[in-house]
Image (cartoon, rainbow, N blue to C red; front, side, top):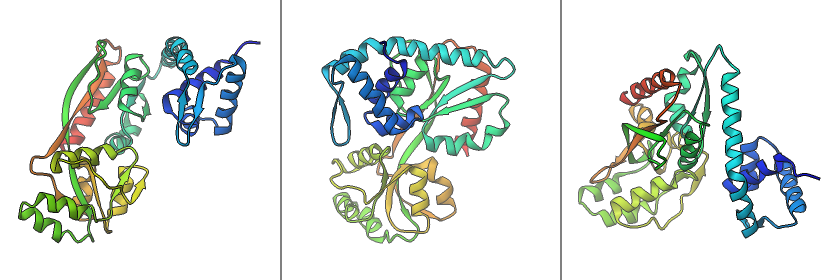
Amino acid sequence: MRWNLEWIRTFKAIYETGTLSAAAQELFISQPGVSLHLNSLEAYTGYKLFDRAARKMVPTEKGKILYNFVIEPLNKMEVAEQHFHKRSQEDRTTISVGMCFETFQYTLEEHIAKLPFNLIIKFGEYPQMQQDLDHGLLDLIITPQKGNQPNLMYEAFSKERLVLIAGSETDTAGVLDLLEANDIKGVANLLKEQLWYSTAADMEHLKNFWTKHFGLHPDFSPNYIVPNISSIIRCLSGGKGFSVVPDFLCREAMDSKKIQLVWEGQTPLENTLYFGTRKKTIYTEEIQQLQVLLKEKWKV
């Protein structure tokens, strides 16, 4: 009996995502299917590969060793698969782009139907996007983080500013009065008493904003955890509550008075946004076309 390649693909997905449900989403299979693959692999190897914690699958020492053995050949297979797929469509090039979900909605979604090439969008964490770009699985990424892979290059093209926003029906008078009096500690204490929206993915925004402007780690939990930043803006529109989001994602809602800008900070906190590409690519023309669209959108 030989092990099944799909068992190894599933093992890799669990190892990298940390949960059975996330691995199932990445592989487009059911969670019971993921469990079956893992159980079959553990039965074949005779080793326990993960410790099942409440919210995370923690690899055992044997699991770590197996991952180190299989990761390189699996990545090579994925690169071969991606390149073969591209070459098989001679009449229409396929470009793969990595970015966050909200950036896609704000920038590229409205242009997709007009593009003269196929487009595959991948959402995920920035370090994984950098690895996928380096391995040839992505052709372009939009990221606030620069990696150290020698095969990649980064071009700064815009900035995002993290701002404090509130729903249009939110009473912000107390916060604004304290800001006027330069009582920053009082602002922090008052804000902690308010209703807060966040997402699992952008807790880093709140943490960075709070640390930068108040000099402390936020010692409170948001009241509402929603799927993405677009959900936050929709929930706050015409409602009550606070959140910290990148300014370009809420500009239209602010212009239409659905939400209100409360504070940018004494010294605004900004992240530089980069185009990440491989130094050598055969898709220069298509990538440049996408970059032009993205630059124009950020100017609006």
